[in-house]
Length: 420
Image 1 (cartoon, one colour):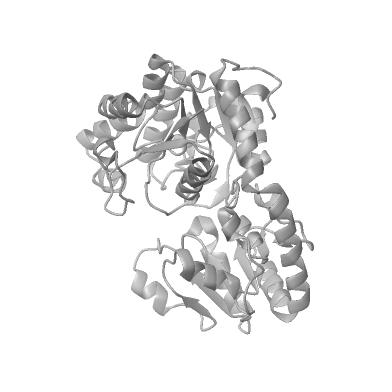
Image 2: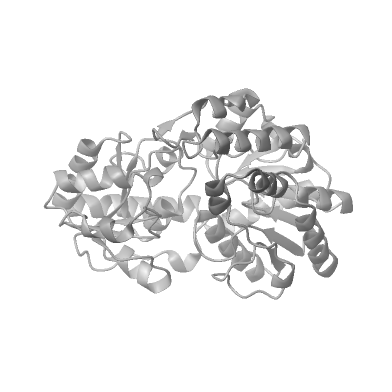
């Protein structure tokens, strides 16, 4: 397994999928492997020697807003099976000649057509899943308009997405997402993947129970934290840090309501602002909440190191958010929703506090407790750091991943000796 091709839509540091992709590239290169990337062209991309082969960008939001028949056809032709993207992928396979293809987030912009090209050439494929797209047409097992967790499309009953208008509150968008899901099922996309990797055990269980995956198809492989991310924290400045995309799925509305209920607690928000009318949003923030914009690198590390704790009140089934495990590596306790993969990380009272999802009063009480009990918050943070050093260490991740690569490469699809 000398040469690995990493495939992910976004080739810039943004969400958890791109964070993992870049972290993994650094880990593999540090162990002597050759790594190449395949993604989508974007002005924000990190420069790459193979970017000439990257797929052309597409603005799904703009196309969906126009809602013309031509635009619907353009979207479907891109997301279901893109001949052009397969052609571009074939060119990077010609140049790089990888031993294995490791997929991350490919739905929509890239499409599973790249899987068929890899299969045609006999190149094994593994796929790390960062969401629930293979179960839910709306990706997050959530109804957008109500922010309610939903498992109605279990057992490939994707038509229920249309009945619920779950995607963007739009029957058209929901119908197109359902059609994509049916098409990929009929095309047997799953059968072209040697192993699916899930960062959380929660996601693995959902794939087995709701989507009929066989146990040997899916391996639970936790994410890892690069060694340099492990610190003992900095000077405690007393604030609670929210560091995620600022939108409703991350529980932003719950957090702001909690801020109003706990006015003595200082909260700092860092991340990409996804809400409409950004200026009005910032002007209307509670007095104890400060938005500092999108932060990366040392700026974000400093914010995290000086926080008393980190908060993530998401209303969806988070998989294994870097927000939490990076906070743990910095020795910070986390306040999180008692939901999804977050419950595997935040043991209540030991590595942080769990609160009922979408419950501003409970969140406010937890924030107030952390703000008022710095020694206990510090103790939980150190417990969290010890846990992360054991369960999310880079070397442990590498050894398990190489075992998976080797098993898939040796044609061991379905071999039950692989770890699950």
